[in-house]
Length: 292
Image (tube, rainbow, N blue to C red):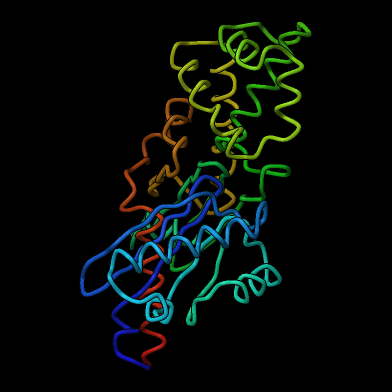
C-alpha cells in the first residue's frame, strides 16, 4: 500500500445535527461541516452528507477525490446499531479502507484522551461511556423513542409535554409553558409539530428550556433536574466511582451541571478534545494496522 495512505487519514463524526469530517495530511488537519448524518433516522441523507463532506475535504486539500478515498478512514455515526447497518454503510460509502462504528468511541477518546474516567454526552441524543482499567464500556444511546434521556431532543420534547399538561391543569403554566403555547399557536400546533418533528427539531427548543431554568422557571428547572437525575443514576453502572474524571460533552450537557449531586460536580473536568479529535486518533490506529 502507498506510504501516503499511512500518513494521510480521514475521520467522520456524524450525528443528528451535523456531520464533521477531517483530513490529517502532512501534519495539518483540514475540517468540513455538513448537515445531519444519523443513518438510523435517514440513511440516504446521512450518506449524502458524508459524501459531500469528503468532496469538500478534497477541494480544500487540493487532491483528487479518488486519491482521498483511498486514505484510511474512521467513520463514527449516530444510528449505527449493529452489523446489518454497518454492512449497508460499507456498501454505500465510496471509501476504500474504513472502520465503521457508532459515534460513541470517538466521543469517548476525544474527551478523555489517555485518562481514565467517564463521559456524559448530551447532544441531540445522549449516551454514557467509560474508559477504566484499559476497558471501554457504554450505555444509553438508544435513540429518541426508547432512550436518549437528558439529550437536547428529550429536553425539547419534555417541555412540549409539560406545556400541554399546563393546559390540563396538571402542571403550572409558567412563562416557559406560555412561551411554547404562543410559539406554536396553542395545543393544536404543539401536537401537529410533535407528530412529525425530527430529533434535531425537538432539540432546537432546548435553549428555551435552559434559559428559562436559568431564570428559575419552575417547569424549566423541573426538566433540567429530571435530566440530571437520569445522568446521576447512569454513572455507577458503567463503573464510575467518586474521584474518577467526568467529562460533560455535547451542546446541552454542561447545562445539567448545577443540578447534579455535589460528589459528581466535584469530579467534572474539561474534555481533552472533541469527538472529531477522537475519530482522528482512531483513524490513525487503523492506518497503523494497515502498515503492519
